Length: 175
Image 1 (cartoon, rainbow, N blue to C red):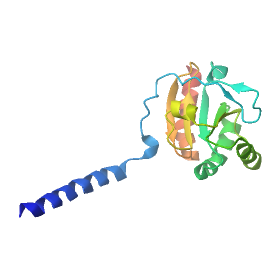
Image 2 (cartoon, rainbow, N blue to C red):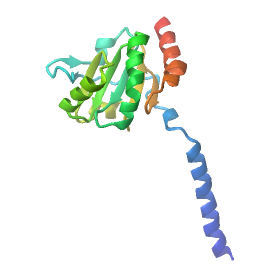
Image 3 (cartoon, helix red, strand yellow):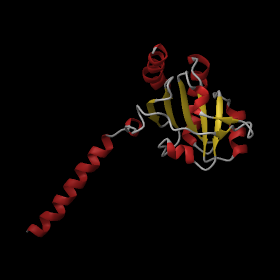
Image 4 (cartoon, helix red, strand yellow):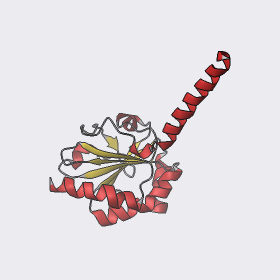
């Protein structure tokens, strides 16, 4: 009799774990980088390989780092939201073209529009790894002192921008 109860008990535990896992939202996975300085990098710009971009260039400003790639379907979904945010919010957005082909990244921005003030080209993904990126798109809010204040995983929506990002950006700009 107990030989039948063990598999049933294990099945019940696995079912409970699955139920808990289904309630989790991947966009709300806490990042160990929140409250810590944004990792330093110096990368070539997508549009100008001889020019470099670094987080130090944005010191003193609240800014966003948006990790994207031309091969990313969710990035296409998010793109109109970034175009509106760039136009309306007055906050610099730096794109991090992640594990991409330089020419395909340029063509993608030419085709869909460029919401970015600068685009850093992260061909091998090392900077993405330093930021804890495990999928694209991901967006980070970085304060005037260069500290990561928020991370959003997945494509941004207009509601998330309105309800979370814009209030945080306004608060950080007042500080």
